[in-house]
Amino acid sequence: MSFKTFWKESIVGFIVKRILLAIAIIVSLVWITLIVLDHYTHHGESVTVPDLQGLYVEEAQNLLENYELYTQVIDSVYVKDKALGTIVEQIPPANSSVKKNRSIYLILNKRQVKMIPFPDLNDVSFRQADALIKSLGLRVSGVVYRPSEFKDLVIDVSYFGQRIEPGTRLPEGAAVVLVVGSGVGEEISAVPGLIGKTFNDAKNEAIASSFIIGAVNYDVTPVGNEGEYMIYRQIPAAGEKWPDGTRIDIWLTKDKYLIEESINNQVEEEEFF
Image (cartoon, rainbow, N blue to C red; front, side, top):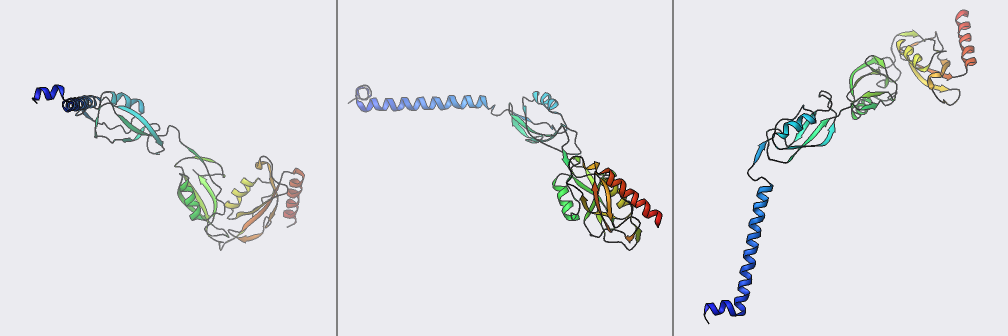
């Protein structure tokens, strides 16, 4: 059988022709696919990524247009020493080589400072207080030791020289000063008179007089603004001599008559002595 007859009339020739045709089609498809991918991925075309840190997103977008690149914000953090809303990190980093038309991923400094409610640290050890403050994104900038029956426990907290209450909102990264007990002092001082004062005023005066507030009691369960309650009883009593750092237990009420009666009794005692 001649090759011509084999190629045109035999079944084997028919099958071989179909196989060769299929191979030709596959090769053509692969070749076309590679050309398309090469064009789509810009094979061999790369640009150097500029440094975007410190820029705002809008500025970065305008800059990257010249490189045929795009921006995509993926996260935000708070960095104290960076301008709010600016870029603090980019992926890939500056001076990397990338293909055109790809995205540069950005991490921004938050546009607003996060405000953190300050925890209640009264009677918490210095170590625990320091760890808790750091875990919240705040800092301890200093420690002041004052006489106290309970050594190394936090007595008070101040921020820019002002005493702060638990729940006060501070900006993330803010630094506070802890007032920590150093043990009962050797000096003997007169107990200050706290009757008729609010809790905050009493605490400030106690600390200024080298004492601390101990147990806090109410004649009834507090309802509403606790700043409306005033002290009507204290132990030890005003004028008594005690070592620095001694606790003063206090009782508070909103009953004006009870407060007035306690003040009058205190005045009578002072006049008697």
